[in-house]
Length: 391
Image (cartoon, rainbow, N blue to C red; front, side):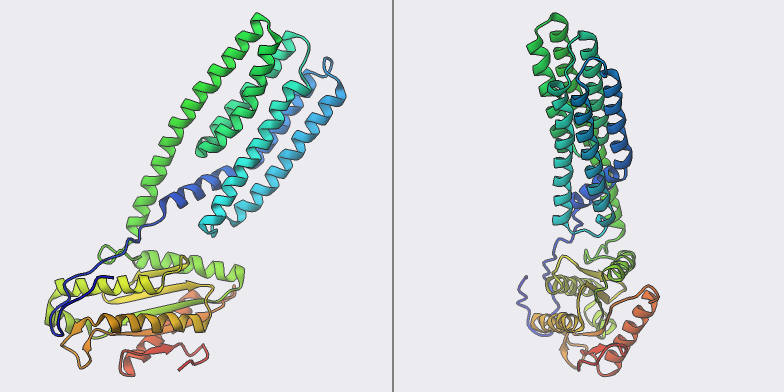
């Protein structure tokens, strides 16, 4: 926090704002996984269909037990992969960063297992004649290509997906030693290399597009003065956290904060100094409501708000008190009021919403609590009447 060395009565001249930019990488990863998980049913079906084609094509030239065991393992892996990713897809929207990273790792592991089963086919069901071998190698090349299209959104997974198929196939072809099979091995290496280059370029284009999109969305939800969320960002977060609280049946807290007598502050110090004071208020608010699940916003001229998920009344009250204490310690001069320093009035509300509950009513109750705090002399915290009083 920047230290203010001004004497009482002089305007605030220095503010150190926090960087409140959206975690773009987190959003990009979540969006990529969401797309991949939604496509997983068709991917799983595609693996089973391709495996069945191989069984039919090699039915007369490879031991049937080997074929059926290999297809059974491939099918089981597809089902497990489908179940795991579909379960993750339903929870992806509200997942924290660590959870999304874990699910990305799970996707990588699933891809490695699936492609290893395909790679094992060149040892378990390798046909004796060159014609059937060419069929198997062509199918493996198709599996690699299909994976390249899907996993271009997740570059690391594609590399891990591609190599367990390419390496065993090339080794087996090279060991066979015939001229035609060595040519197939060279072609497979070249094909995989070109695909890796193409996927890398496609990934860059896709990620750049997502990055621009999320940056534009972040700017449209950010208050230019304080770098907090603006009213649009606040409304969207309120709806999102409200729905999350309904699903988890955990309480959520809301603070609506109004800077006391701010018009008088602007009249005395001027609007440029008023802007500096608002930036300082926003900075202090971010330092107090610092959990990753807390959402701070500037929702009006001198009005701020904090949404706190999974927070009881006591915890919400503590945040409100800590913010008032931080603002008092900052001693931002306000000579055009009796107190002599900038202060805030706070309306507080906590609720565990049900499906039948109204977020609009929750907001109105908090606004009413703020009104009562201002009417009772300002620099106060008032709890909404729907809550147990903590005065």
